[in-house]
Length: 294
Ligand code: FPP
Ligand code: MG
Image (cartoon, rainbow, N blue to C red; front, side, top):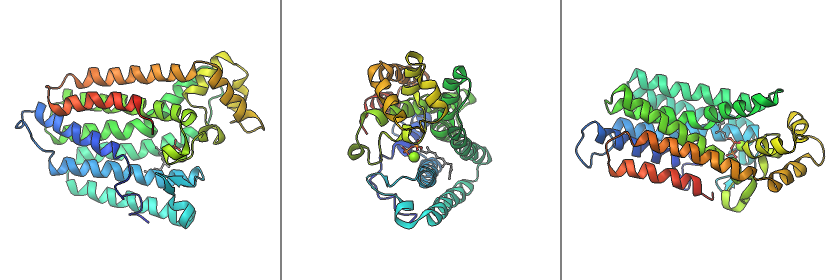
């Protein structure tokens, strides 16, 4: 069950970012021109994917999902009890791999990710009563659930490259901004894409009671959405009305503009590193995040 998602079919987005960041930092720090990632940095890239996968196995229990990455999810195939233990097991092995690196600072960084993931998931279970606080709550939740993993793993490989605090901060800020943009696009795709393309259910967030960026923008023009957000779209017709409001307004466009702003900031950050092919790849990646269809 633990091996099930490690079949080479995932996007491996997180390991790719972490490995590129490793090499960009190593290069900036004066390593030879085509310096490979260090074994410890390669380990961080694997650990990042393992933490992510463990959280998805648990998330599919919470969301009662049937599919993930184009196949039936562990909880669907084996039931909730085994899925929870499978997530625990993947997380355990990732913790062992992290401890084996033997760097206390890196252990602290990656432990923070796990706390953020759990807190982010809890934040998603609640809705802010005050409309003005909702967007800030959504962005904070998005940081914890999605961006923290990228931000902290990028900082961890910068630490392992022997980089200065300034460079560590650049790596962190790149990961954070790219991560928030990635989730904004994910939230847009939930309205735009199909289950076939995404390999997981779409149009799912509203049904789960979640108000993401497109709905929060639509509520600025259709204040009647606020009551639905509060009751988490639980009454008949709520989901359909909210979806209609999103399509009738430029809410998806607004979400895209916000994602573009985060990508621009990610680029601004990474350009503080010395030019290298990996730095350029990290710049290009921001465009790929914006234009992805799955
Ligand atoms: C996907 O959310 C879920 C996450 C990014 C994190 C979930 C975190 C937990 C369940 C806490 C437990 C954490 C660990 C480390 C075991 P989504 O439902 O918005 O995305 P989806 O459409 O891909 O399901
Ligand atoms: Mg889910």
